[in-house]
Image (cartoon, rainbow, N blue to C red; front, top):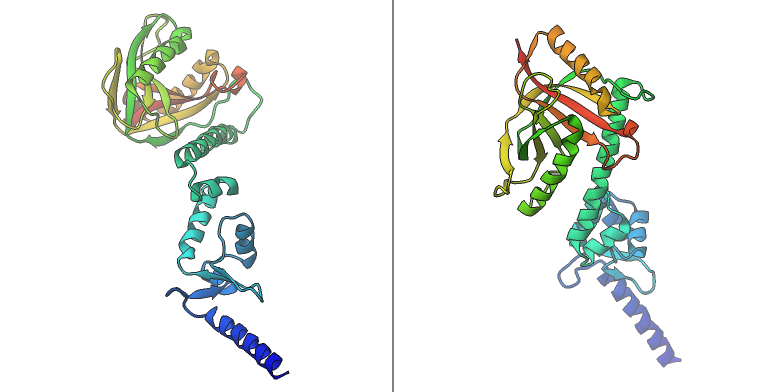
Length: 294
């Protein structure tokens, strides 16, 4: 009996020591109960348990008897990384891969592609909201002045027989950009500049432009320019390019009525088109005309 009593007393003392040590520094690191750690990092206990279940953040110590979870201060950095990645739109599976040694370039590249697709859709929705109409073959948004910042652009000058040939020239430019090793800017900014004043029926001089991250060595007809910041009168056009003249008429009238003067080559920015829309009714173009006060 005496030996049994002493054994029970020893086990009880060991448990008391464990409970005491659970709140003391372990390897010079203080352990914090799950509730305290959650409050320190502005998350809920439920969130921490969920991250544990998903294998994203394991407690530093789990008490064998009580099951209490304990965390170290160092794990706050891990938790903040998870929170930041989640805010950036990554799924929990993607976060697990990123924090567990997965290929970050591939995962981030996929996320960027999703963001670009969302930007394209939101830009289209914004144009619809600004116009208040959605059923016409073309949509004229209210003209507005906006600043278009300095841009590094891959450029190719060409003379086309008609506007129908414009996208054939873009195919050639795309091949030259690939040879030059260009990386397009995010968000995408693809546009045509018309250096000559007035409307041309044929022999149309155009400068095809694509915003890129950095200048490269020229390849064939492809060269690089840093285009300065401009103030532009802008209008969205929805639908076929055959009706672009109506949008041009609207913005040019606005420029005249508001005492402005055209101050540089007109730009057509292609937001949605044959590359991502099955029907031309989904095409979205922004006409950008540099202006200054007369």
